[in-house]
Length: 153
Image (tube, rainbow, N blue to C red; front, side):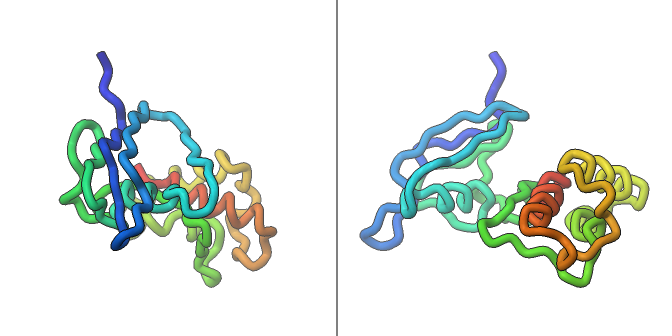
């Protein structure tokens, strides 16, 4: 039997008397794309923040490859996230924005170059690599943010 890549177990998050996430349990296989769909205030973002480590759950667990992430700080989880209000660095080109998380992790120039090329091809923005975000449409900027989030290993 294969184990899920990401597991959420009985996740609960309360803000005082308000329960934002109540008893979420979910297994996600490696490579699967998943969408949380629901009305405002239903706990979608709060659940994602708990997975990424930006908010601690009130109870429950988040496991990556069967290891709890609760004690792992967000910057060591290697989880990319595209926020609802994503931010691109306006002074960096598209390629430099995508490369940013790899540079922070001190990846080799060759690895960064290949990963940036792969991610820009994935979001079909190869010809925009040298442009600044201000020269892109909103949809193109979203795809750059997605490429940057996916550049994590």
